[in-house]
Length: 167
Image (cartoon, rainbow, N blue to C red; front, top):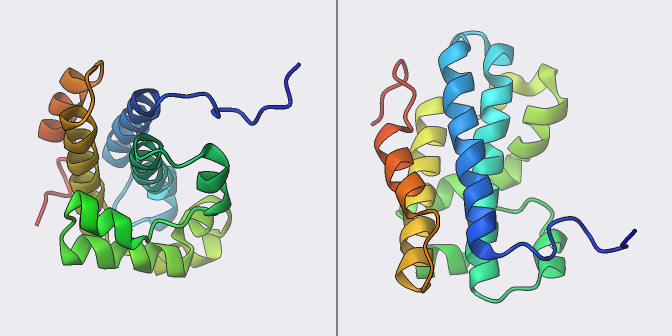
């Protein structure tokens, strides 16, 4: 049995594939939840937030950041490097900062009494869609292999839950 932290040896494109899986799970869960019942979409929200974090982790891994440094970030989604290198929109960058400051990752997992404090679903899905697209484009533009290319392209076209639309 190894003392290595799980995922320490994962390649950036493998982390990207995992992010895609969580993104697809969030889409499915959003379609099953009731938008006006905060707790019914908590699992979908959790999957979406986790997908965003995984996309950003894949980007960091691709940039050569050590897994230990990524874990030390403690679910922080806000970092100037993301905005600069991924060319994220100001609204998206601000949303990443707000989600980190409000600790939405933890609220979605453990605090049903704070479920109404989350950002709007349209903002969350727009952030996920943009981070997914920019990280996928960046990794595939700068990588010689591309096992996730088709999955990313398909996911971009179909992410937004039908009932929620996109602004």
